[in-house]
Every structure is written in structure tokens, then in C-alpha cells.
Image (cartoon, rainbow, N blue to C red; front, side, top):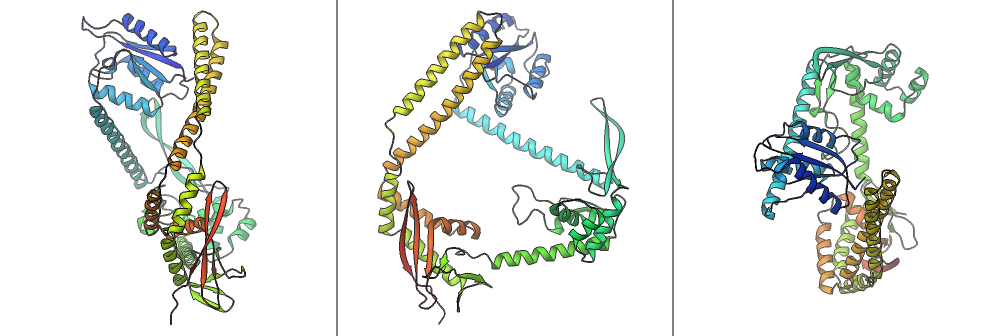
Length: 498
């Protein structure tokens, strides 16, 4: 629940230190003022705050990261209760923030904003470094496992099963194990026969049916890409990361890490290489076809009578007319850039922007704010009742319902406030604003890759008409605002070879 909190109390050997009882009293008052229900308490009596090796603090850390945690706030007397050293307190606050937990202090020392920003930046950088170091250590560990013939992790591929091996080491009282691949008697023969057939070009789907291999088509394709695994080698670093640049899911063969002869082979290496070579040829062929068919105006380039121009081998053709695609596309884009900055379209965009959304009179915003205040009052009343009863469960459920209602109201309030801000900005837009925006848009078009440029053209253009006889055409723009679609034809003539 969003209104549940825990206390953290720490006293030290310093005689002038605030007692646990005094800390508890102030924190309970803070909880009441913040409409928070205290559900737990962690304390360290006469413990140094210079490090984190304190029983109560360690229990707090453990419960902070627990999946079943039901509190979302920690109350402490001041930052020194968390740690005498500033970086300990800030690191803890930073960790809590990532886990969605607020820390509230009864006594907060003033910190200048610049120092706070610097501390936040340093902690975020430390997070990234820690993440990278953890990843590098993990990768190094997996690489060493692979070199020793063990699996780097994951399930056994079809045709194999995992042999679990105890290393003799213990971790947290549990034996540390590693795994190796061994043939699965039930499926090894089937997959070996299937892969050998694929190596000489037999139909994969038909063989799978004949052999009784009940796998989806995508799974069969994956088996082929892992052919070297079936040749007895462990292959690593095949797949690209989510944010890694490049085409396709897999890295080039040169980037693969291969540890040879780590387990029993089901096929010969030459058979695995034959399968991979065929896959690479098919991939290259598909990429070439995709490049040839990647026509920017496909679907929107038509003749005056509405017939489509079709792309083929780098040209657009309609009937007997055949024109190089780049000539038409370059001409359309050049006219588009000029037209976007024309007085006619600038005025049209200005008019539509001003009419797009009329700012509200604020009545709905005030109504929502009033509803939020009413829910807050209801929650406060329920909190008072909880203090006066020995059976708080029904009241807690009611508070939870009210908290959900409040969250929904706040979400609507934020959305409406954002819409109102945007509407006011649109209503105040000037002609110079529009000119700056379309100029920036024209510049941005030059930086778009082909896929994004194609998407942009489909959104901006309703259709492009090109007469195959006269080789002249017109561009019909699509301007959408407040549900109104406008078409503005502009003439163009592609530059054709003499």
C-alpha cells in the first residue's frame, strides 16, 4: 500500500545523541502528519554510523529488496541515522529511489542544490560503472566456463540434455553446480538425421514431419543457425544486444566465440558449415531483394487514373513507362522541402494549429482538484478512525480503495493539465514559430534513414500522381488536424535523362 511506512532508529555512544525513544516519538508524529501507517520498525542501539554493518540496517536492506514488501516509505530522524558518512546516506537514498521507496527525515539538514545534483550524478555514474563491471565479470565467468567445456547457461538444445556436475564448492550452504551437454537418447537420432538432410538441401518441414520432430518453423530455423553446437562446439556471442547497431538478430560469423570439442557431436563439422553457408547465402539474397524493393513512394505513387506505379530493379513502371526510382524520389523530396516552407502551407499550418485545440476554461481542472481534496479528507478521517479501533482491517481496505481512487484522479488531472498547456501553446503560436518548425523539419528530413523517411512520406503525402505519358505530376499533401484531412496538390516534374 502506498501509505504504509517503516521506521529506522539508530543511537550511538555519543551522550548527546538523540535516544531511540525520542526518535520514535518524532517519527510517529511525522507519520501522522504525512497520513502514513507505520507497519514496522528497525533499530540499531549504540551502533556506529560510519559503515553499514549493523544488524537493524542489514535487515532493512534485505526487506527493502524483498518482493513481498508492502511499505513504500522509510522514516528516519536525520541523514546521520542512515550513515555518518554522507556517501552512505546518499547511496542508500539513491537505491531506495530506484526501488520506488521514499525516505522522509524528521530533521533534514540543508543541502545546497548544486551539491545534491553533483551527488546524484556521481551515484548514477557509479551505478553504470557497477553494472558494466558486473556484466564484464559475468561475461568473463561464462567465457571461462565455456573454455572448460561447461555450458554458459540456458536450456539444452533439442537433441541434448544437461548433465549436472557438482564442483565441490558451496555458496550460501548450497552446492555449486555446472552443466555439460550429453545426447538425449529420445531425440538425438532424429535431430542428427534432420540436420544431415538439411546439409544436402532436403526439405526441412517434410523431414521434420517424417522424423516426428514437432517443432515450429521458427524453432527449426534456429536449430540450423546453431549447427556448430551439433558439431560438438560451444558457440557464444552470436546474438546482438537490444541496443546494439546492425542488421538482424545475429552478429557476423567473425564475431562469434567458438570453443571447439566441448561435448559429443551429432553431425560432422563439414555438415554444420554447409548448413550455415546456405543460411548466409539466403540471408544475403533476402537483403538484396529488400534493398531493391525499398521504394519510398510505393503505395502512394499513382497515375492520374489511379493505377499504381510498381517498383522493379530500381525503377518505377506503369504500363510501358519505366523511370529510374531515384529520379522520381529525389524530385518529390526536393519539391516537398520547398513546399513545406511556402507561404501557402505555412498559413494553412498556422490556421490549423490555432484551431487544433481550444484551451479549456479551467473548470474541469478545478473540479478534479476538488475531488482530489475530498478524497484526501476522506483518507485522513479513516486514519483517525484507525487510531481509535482495535480492528483496523476493514478501514485499511477502505483506505486502499480511496488511494486507488486518488491515483486515478491524479492521473486524469495530470493528463488534463498537460493537454491544457499544449492547447495554450498552440493557441499562442505565431507565423514565425511555424516557419522555424517547418525549416527544422526540412533539415531533419536529410538525416532520416530510408525506412524512417518512407514512414514520414506516407504520413505527409496523400498521393503522388505521375502521368506516364507527359512525365508530369502533382503532389497531394495530407494535413491532419482536429479530424479534418486536407489535400493540397502541388505540381512537380521529375528530371529525366535526355
